[in-house]
Structure formats: structure tokens, C-alpha cells
Amino acid sequence: MVATTDLLVEGRHFRRDWSGPADIGVKAAAQNLADVAAMGAVPTALLVGLATPGDLAVDWALDLVRGLVAECERGGAAIAGGDVTSAGTVMLGITALGDLEGRPPVTRAGARPGDLLAVAGRPGRSAAGLALLAAGRADEKLPAELAGLVAAHRRPQPPYPAGPEAARLGATAMIDISDGLLQDVGHVAAASGVSIDIDTARLPDPGPLYAAAGTLGADWLDWALTGGEDHALAATFPPGTALPEGWTVVGAAARGSGVLVNSRPHPGIGGWNHFR
Amino acid sequence: MVATTDLLVEGRHFRRDWSGPADIGVKAAAQNLADVAAMGAVPTALLVGLATPGDLAVDWALDLVRGLVAECERGGAAIAGGDVTSAGTVMLGITALGDLEGRPPVTRAGARPGDLLAVAGRPGRSAAGLALLAAGRADEKLPAELAGLVAAHRRPQPPYPAGPEAARLGATAMIDISDGLLQDVGHVAAASGVSIDIDTARLPDPGPLYAAAGTLGADWLDWALTGGEDHALAATFPPGTALPEGWTVVGAAARGSGVLVNSRPHPGIGGWNHFR
Picture 1 (cartoon, one colour):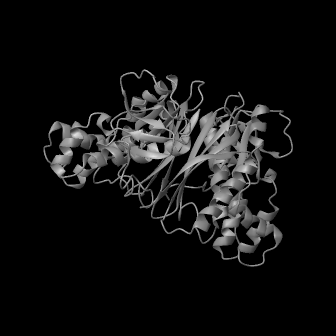
Picture 2 (picture 1 turned 120 degrees about the vertical axis):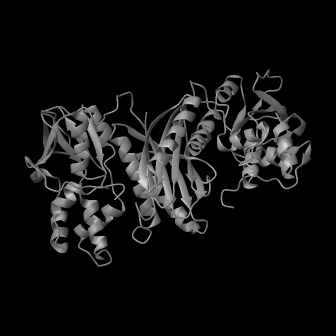
Picture 3 (picture 1 turned 90 degrees about the vertical axis):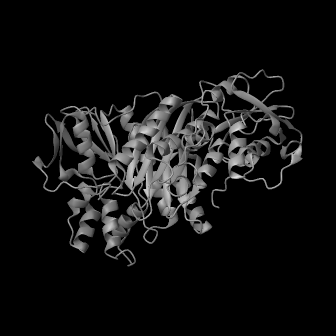
């Protein structure tokens, strides 16, 4: 089995004025269940620690739980227990457990020169949705593809089955993209002792990112490369692996170190800093 | 396997001016590892989520980790992972995992009329130590038995091996005493559908509690019956079970409901209220 834990702090990981309680529950479950899937495991259980002010509305807590339950159901897991206590602000401590079905875990450390880099899911959508929210555009009647980005920020939909699927296909390394594609692929490159080159022309489904970037005067590639919170999966596979639908080849590993973008160093590699 | 999680919030579960970081780490690990042992499992791993203000001294965090590691070693477990983030106050989200070694878990629900009630560990010591701290007596040169109570508050020492030992001996129900003997035995009585009678003359090692009560003008029995945080274990066993050293018979289960003290209802049954 595998186990993973995350803390989510009001004002840092979520805002009660930008996300409803059910959305916060979905995100809290999703980011932990995605970590389980990224090891190649099937999510089985969630433990939920909830700290709240004593005057929190009961409906808010119930809706939070509804969101947690809904995403657990989407991932095939159950809420198995938890803890409740009081605190000055809302905080969640989530632990997810998963079943490796007898396989060894897929770590960050197994990529080899020549391996393919592929992603499942669509990195950058959550960051683009957050940018629309920050620009005050989420209250407008948005075109469907932009509304989809806001929804992706509020309720990421990690591709859980793709994790164990990649493990069965022989993935050599895997990670969930929670801090940005560049930064998380960088963790794989560093742990594996390889360099990884990302071909931005192959990134999946950039259309909505183009549209949002045009609307906001922003750079779509910045969201795609440095946006976290989609909990898409990135994995490396032996060269020649036939990948099923849902996985898109976006690069390759080679001898060396670090991450390249279109075969060049990327200026201003960013991503989420947990203390910034 | 079994899994358990707890949140610990500064100002609610610990005070940085009353407990050093290593003590806080010991307590955080102890209360979760004791929950694992109380299911009859052998503690194996701890996941540690740590939220801190960005300006927390690094030495404070390192000492916290030293306390966590020390108690894990006492319990036979390892820190297997975790999460770090920022927050306005220090908060810990701890998850402990344990190995049932193929046995079914010992729950709260299996006590039967006629079963013995026994405890491992010495409930009330932490509460007495806290009372000494609250009275400003901890900075004095205390007699050894009173200093031992303060130490028991700062660093509880749950009897981890007693948990799996009780399971192997056929314990019918078990719980770790974190909210007070009366309240936690009450949980067993309610879940099992029995009444449980506690014989206060048989409570283990009351000497230091008498001494502290005399010094502070307090009631030693209040600490012993309603004090939590010692993480002693309470378990029920079939009548006639020969209990090894470390387990003390302190009562028995019967038909009925609720908890009796010396065969009478106890006025003012207290214990820890998580939202008081």
C-alpha cells in the first residue's frame, strides 16, 4: 500500500470567497488521491482531519464533506475516518491510502535516457481558471471553454485510473503535477539523474488556454508550464511503449540534468513555492 | 493494517510556552501511535504534516522533528513522509499506520457482560502534571514524584506493546484513554451495549496523584477518572484471562449501560470536550 498526506490552510490553499465548501472538499480529496495514483496505486481510503472555528456554519461543513465524498467516489475510495477540532481558521489534514495490487511503487527516480515523457490530464487549466478568478472575470457569463477553466480550478479532475494503468504499462517514473509541469518534471529529472526535454507543441488541448490568454493578455505557456493544481500525471515510459488514449507524449529523457523546453533552457522556471 | 489521524493546533492542543518543541513532537507521535496500539496493531509508520508561520525558528522545527523521531523509535515506527506549508500558527496533522499481523482489529464494540476491565499505563498523571503547570509550580524544585507528573504531561509514555499483547490475549474491546478514563470507557460501554463498573481502589499507582492533590488542594480521583492525554490503554478481557505484568484489572462489564464508579453513578462525569 501507499500513503500520502497534505495540509490545506484557509487563505493559503483555498479562499472561502472564491470556492464553495463542496469545491474545497473536491480539491482536498483530489490532490491526495492523485498522489496515490501517481505512485501507480488504486486509491482506497481517505482520512479527514478538520479544524474549524467553533462558529462555522454546519451547512458549510456538511457541504465540504459532500465534496470530499463525491471526489472519493470518482476515485473509487471511501472516507475511512478522521478527526475534528477547533482552530481560528479552517484547516484540513487529509491522508489518502492506496493499493499497489502487488506492484512495486512507481517513484520519481526510475527515468532513463531515451524514455518518453507523457502526461495524462491537461496541465495549466487550473492556473488559467485562477487567473480568470483573480481578474474578476468568473462572475461574467463566460464562453464555455473559459468557464471550463474556472471549473477546472474549482474542481480539478485528476485522471486517477491513468496512474495504475501507467504502472501496468511499465512506467519508469511518475509524479502528479501539483506545483507545475516544469517543476514537477524537474523533480523526476533530478531524482532519476537525467535531463528531460518538453516539446510545447505537443501539450494536450491548449485551445482554452490560448483563449484565456487572449482575453487576459497573458501567456498561455506560463500556465501550461508552471501552473499547478490540475493534478495531471506526468510519467516516463521505455522508448516504443504504445500509450493508450488519455496519455500524450510531450517529450523525452536524455543524458544530462535539468529540464529543457523545446530543447532550450527555459528562462524564469517557476511554479509553486510553499513559503512564498 | 490500521490508520489513524489527528490534528494538533497551537493554543488548543499545546502551548509553546509550556512545552518545548521536542515535547510537542513526542506528544503528537504518542497520541497517534497509541491509537494504533489500541486497535491491537504494531505501529509501523508516521506521516507528518507541519504548518508553521514563515518566521518560525528552524531550530524549533528541528527539535519538533527530534521529538517525533524519538517517540517513533520508542514505538518501533518510522517517519515515512509528510507535508510542509505555511500558516498563521503552528499546526500538525499526524497520521499513524500499524500492522495487525493478520489479526482482526480490536474495536470498542466487543465487550460482553462478565468481562474484566483492565488498564495498561497510569491514567491521570498527565492531568495532574498539567494542574501543576497551570498553578505555576513546574518551575519550582519539585519532589521527584511530582516532577514525574509534569514530565508525564510533557511526554506521555503510552505502553505500545500492551496493545498487540492484549489482542493476542483475546481482548474483546480496547481504547486509548485520550479523553479521560470515564469518557473513553463510556465509549466502550456504549459501543458494546454493556455497563462497566470501575473500582477506584484498584487504579494503578495513585501515590503521585495523592501527593499532587494534597499540594494543590485538588481531588486526585478527578484526574484519574477524567484526565486525558496519558494514552494509557483500557481493554476488556473474557473473565478468567490471566493478565501479564503491565495490565491491572480495575473493573468489570455487566448487563446494562453506562459507566459506574464503585458501583454507583458518578456525579459530573467529565472529560475532554473538543469544542469547549
